[in-house]
Length: 489
Image (cartoon, rainbow, N blue to C red; front, side, top):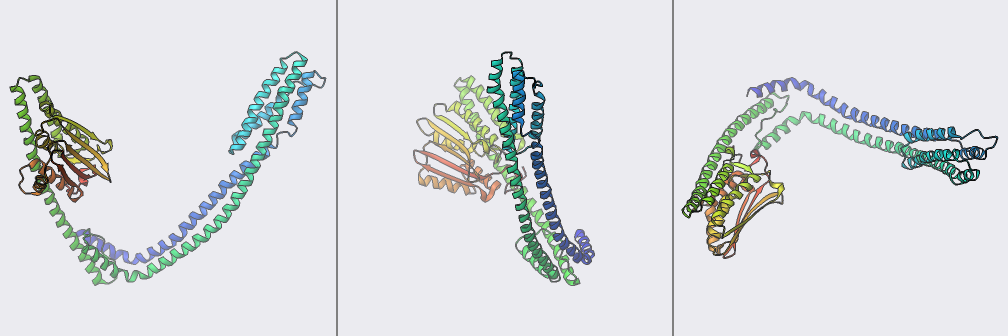
């Protein structure tokens, strides 16, 4: 209530500035997009201009490569190979200058075709230097002339051809960039026109909104009443109005909603406590039931002299109850539930090894989702004692977990004696009965409904002398707080 009164004062102080704030917002909604468009255009222009200058610079730099490179190198090497008086030595300096120019162009070039050409020039220049060195180390005149014809002349021709290809590729790149710049200018003009139309529409809509601010308080108050009628009980800022009575009505209305929301929250907390107590009572029903049957099995093993199996049984029972405790938690991950039911079946298989086989198959992706503790074990126990145990030959229990249609599907299937339609109907009715003989399955059903509400399903199908299938479908929940029951565990 104090917060509501404080908000009332703030609302009164804000009345005189609300209109100016809206006008400033209108100006900013026009100025900021225009500024952003201008900055984008400038950035695109600078980027394209840099690209264009870089490529044109490459073309200018590549033009420094002598057009008579081949003729000059070939002539100087001919003089050198023939021992002419005009020979000035191996023209290694000319090749090095060409190689230096090619390396510079390689660092500045981004076009793939141009890069391939200039890399070829670099490789060929390196080969040319090696062939020139070979000629300098060859004394036979005939061998020198042969090397000149088969190596140097071919390499210089290839170098010049690849340099021309580089110039051609860069010239094509310049043409493409020019086309892109022309296209960019046209696109910018179109965008400017579109933005102008959009901003004009925004300005008109803002102006209309400001003009309606006089009648808006009444509409807002009416909408607030409608939202409360639909169940929205979160207190909000009262309606800002210049009329004193309308303002007082809005303030009192929000104060009433705040008190009502607080009372509903208290009622919700009490309901959660009741649900938690119900879960604890149902949990207490399940644990002693299994303990009784397990201890009975251990006694039977001791009485029949199977002490080693009894020790193994006690060890398995210890592991089972260690996982059953789960540090006091009533809601655990499916990986823990899987280990729990596996321990149970290991215990039971000691006694029923001639009658029981089982298989557990859980998909890896469901392991981190939550489920009420002891969801599967009572169902497996029911399958064993009321299905497999009453069957003469070997029986099997199949436990599966997977994702289907954004739900987690858990199934417990046995190959026991099954049920007739009449028996199946009685079992289904016992699930919702206030007092049921088979409290294990009924307790699981009730706990699932307390945890997940209408989001879960519990289906039983059976056929006489063929077996029974229980299919549980629950939502994908990773935290206790997100369960519909909202039980504190």
